[in-house]
Length: 261
Length: 296
Image (cartoon, rainbow over all chains, first blue to last red; front, side):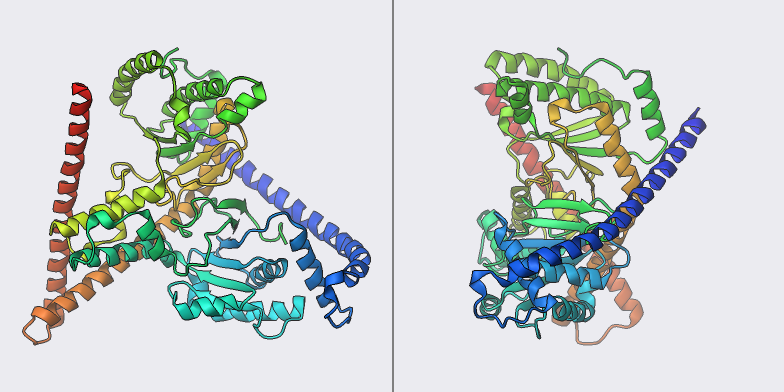
């Protein structure tokens, strides 16, 4: 009897996989087909609207596609009732697609999100952040016609100093590149720091509470907790993403990049 | 009304349960039982009625979990109102619950109910306990590690949840088991808690099964990383010790290995003593609490 159940289970899982693959395939096809239609419609409708927005007097009226895009996205962002202050991009894919992630970061910036975090559970981005940065700068150029990194600041966690705060204030958006070490390990390091203080009689164990721990884990006073996390990849889990900071974070768990872009 | 529903699964449900059990099953499931109030609004009844239904649903869900060989369940009583009833009702219910819990114990099941709980407080408390250990001279600050922190949480006697289910369509963790669910399968379901069905539970378990292998891989990878970090930390501490207390002569590879093993063993012994003392402290606290309650 057990063998029968196991057989049925195997069949069920095969069917589920096929079902998922088919759905994904259809969604990508639909998106591509719709996307071409939509982008043509939008260009026809919105270009004249973008050019006539009143608060853009000081912009050189060169109706390049990139400038329109920048202002269209900015307007989209302003028209929303509430924008998240901090968006986390949780990449749970085995082979991250740098161009797609860079696109997402640039879109977030364009819409007006102040803080964007990028995380993968292998720590690849943290170790080799230059590739991601190059890709982001490239997409910034291509999509928004922005030179250099004058509108985007990159910050790594664990570098919280006053100087960093000042730098952050002058930027429109801040990008954080995170890894699992910024999650539980960071909490453990904060705990070690507090225990050392107790060892040296600077603190007692009764002084330790949520506020004290929170101030240690909040590397910069101005950085808010992630309001929204978009997870890309086949695994339905936070995979160690900043456990302390996600107590009220909303999660959107999607399996594939292509279905969102 | 019985606390744990006596009703068994019907034939189709039993069949489905057996098919599911052919694959990997979660051993510990956590539920955020959300949606009682919305349910009450939807049915146009009193809020209390929503909570009552939610309470009954919990009992039913526990029965399903038992049938699916899920022996540990943790629930987030989202608001303390979930269990608010008149004193007579509470007394009667607790008596019934006590009888049923004994039966649960016989079946070796565990139900953890989180009342007025936030994960951040739990983590801060665990850090405070480790600091207490340092204060008492039981452990050193360098002994603090991820594993030790996990052992100091309230949930230290349970394995981490394999599956976290939140009902009512909300997609937040709401300060629930943030540390313990870092590598759990998350399933957000739009059904309201009082309307939860056996099929909703099966759907969540299917999700768990589909995610089982990559999650296992991620967990193993994390554990390996932890072990490596611990090893590095031990080496650093040893190097520090030798610098301060050594006789200046560098050790050969063999001696160094032995010294490292000795250091690790002594650290583990310290940690065990500390955990014993912590358990004793907690047991005394509970004993004092219950004896005070008995006197009252």
